[in-house]
Length: 483
Image (tube, rainbow, N blue to C red; front, side, top):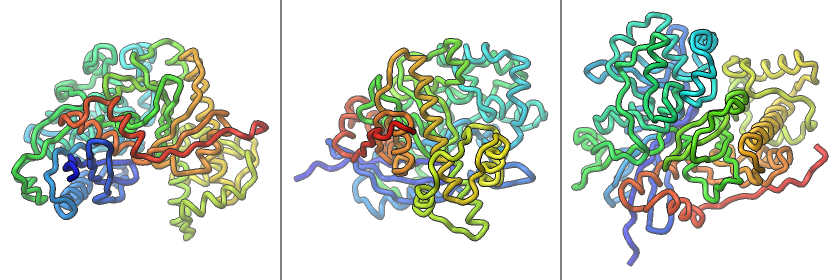
């Protein structure tokens, strides 16, 4: 007779889609089953981009309500992860003061320069260890302060996106560590809010909630919510904070990750980095614009954000609107047929953050930099993928400079690990072995932390060992040296 499985739900929210997944742990390995998938993206209200939190909440509840239809066993816990930097402000009654802004909204334009004029970059980096990106939470809040937004004074609590949903599930208002470290007002050495920095910039601090570590049991699923979604079981469902930043969860679930491996979490964004024990705050790390983000099990993710498959997603969206409904597979076929290395872009050039018409922005960039202009969809997509591979090489070589030793392997996880052309290009351009998988790293890492919190797993090392037997990895070796 087989052992009953321990069952968990991971709510994994990405910038373009969300999923509710059932994770089963049978004592030896994890098994995932998708309960619900839904689209995500910004909504435009009065000229600003926001997240439709109420629709996301309805979709999450739809996913949770499907558990009892597929499983007779009790559910142990639920955990939510999402993208970083964005937040909601709650009033005294715990109600949202407005829909959270989307990080690509233009309200932060110019804010990074204004903040740097008041507090030098070196001082901010020494405190927070974070990469300077125009949409960091620090600049979002600063833009509200500069606009004298009344929400800032009315707010009783600031919650990051996953913490907002954890509050709705459990009633507890806290911010989990891995997401807190992405705000650029978290003191990375003392592991507390950098309130002095905010005060110096005229940003209120009264709404900052307590911080918790990944693996914290936040409480029980609210009884009225359990009834609404049909989870009528004798034992209450626990709400557990995983690594709420999706990259923290993804990196937690990378088997064979060692000091000579770089990770590449590939989706809308590409996060390229290494797992280390202490933050790296040297001037060289600041100069190269690296970031020190908090990871699961007291680790630091020394990494750089690279624009990622957003380039391709936006091209695809624009062509759909023009009556050219290319699938991902069709675009890769066209890209393979296009000439190699005809033109390159810097994926992180500000013009690509939210251009409206990505193909046009790429063509204009190539024209302005004196290169051949990619005309066909295949040439444009090839330009995107080759440029990403080249940027990965630059970041990996910069990491080696900081670390003082060679990184032999690049471990790609997430949706982008399924893009065989990108994986192969990365192996050839970076001249390193690429290991692709698991695709579902974020959900697996989320569930693994829940399993540790509920006593089913000893620690992250045991979890990574279990993943070695339960997933398929694909290897890409560098063979072409001429390019």
